[in-house]
Amino acid sequence: MTTPTILWLRRDLRLADQPALTAAIAEGPVIPVYVLDDAAAGDHAMGGASRWWLHHSLAALDTALRKHGSRLILRRGDAAAVLAALAVETGATRVHCLRHYEPWWRKAEEAVTGQIELVCHDGNYLGPPGSLTTGSGGLYKIYTPFWRALQQRMPPPEPQPAPDVIPAPSHWPHGERLSDWALLPTKPDWATGFSEWEPGEAAAHRQLVAFRDAAADYADTRNLPSVDGSSRLSPHLHFGELSPAQVWHALAEEGGSVDTFLGEIGWRDYAQTVILQYPDYGTVNARPAFDRLPWRSGAAARADLRAWQQGRTGYPIVDAGMRQLWVTGWMHNRVRMITASFLIKHLLIDWREGERWFWDCLVDADYGSNAVNWQWTAGSGVDSNMFPRIMAPLTQSAKFDAADYIRRWVPELAKVGDEAIHDPEQKGARPAAYPAKLIGHREARERALAAYRRTK
Image 1 (cartoon, rainbow, N blue to C red):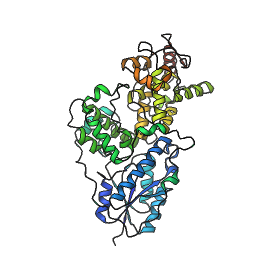
Image 2 (image 1 turned 30 degrees about the vertical axis):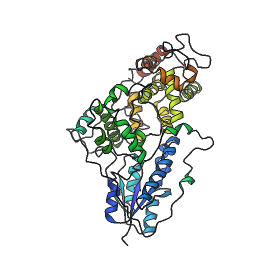
Image 3 (image 1 turned 180 degrees about the vertical axis):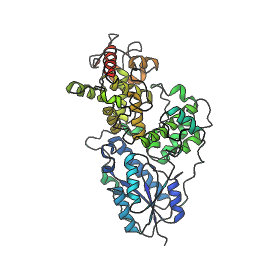
Image 4 (image 1 turned 90 degrees about the vertical axis):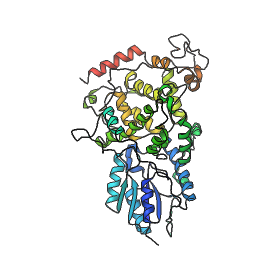
């Protein structure tokens, strides 16, 4: 029997358009392995919502593998040590994987290379992060020229179908039981609202087909929370249940404003290019001047942070978004910007507090995208919104017609009319059960600008 090859899976939980799997099959028997390595990521070990998704995605992947004559081996521990031990146990001499760019995975890949031959492939992004360079030979820091350059390489290669059969080893190594990993919440089960999601590769393709009919209208509907023209593909892309190439080839010819959506796929590539240059982007200001910004701290700030997390700020659009996040593990993209700006500029609370909360609560929590988006909002990023441009949540709510969205997620306001629902306190229509504003918009703006002057 040919010596088996190990397929190391991480955020690439699919069989179709999977270059590492294709390469492993070409060498003979394949042992697909997922290693739960929480220690490697440190403070960025997967949050609760991501762990819920991971459980169901791994179960779906194992089912798919078994239909192709294979199975998924689960192990816990240090990835390099686990793979080295598995190689000794099975006689494998080579590991295939898709390349990852989170700093902890880059370190893990180096550690694996020191113990067994590791072959890394590209396949999780439209183009290999780090392969696009500026005229001076450096990596891009600004999105617009990056996207312009990436478009010159498009379309990506045609996606490859899933293999008919995955050759199995003569003897399967033991694996752990998924249920023993306790990835799902139980006491209490706070994920009951996650039932609107269906993880897994097959479900990802169904969602892609469902979005295709709406993709042409994306620019018109993506900013309307009550309509929600979002693709709902972000968690599927994050866990690699879909490849960006599959998305591109499915949608690129749909016309209308589909290019706007494809630009969002390009933003994922851009975020990886950023963390390739700034591995600690999730914890360190890219602009050192922001180290001088006097973020609020103490009991009052902690109380305001808790009110923001619970969706009890007195700003309906903010509260609707934060409650949607807690119940479903996801938040509408426009509302993500509004809630993030509110935490940073209205409450003057460090963006890293928001990054950590989103990391724990989002089913699509992605290190690169989450960090880049928070630093963009804070103004501390290499490519970011200017801090003095302070988003007005009450105006945003009315502008993007969020009334029905608010009524759905803030039931205390369900009977408030359209003329008052965006700012019930100012209109004298605030129900007793709904909290007063933590701070007025004008007062918050003046406080934020005063703090910003300290960075100069």
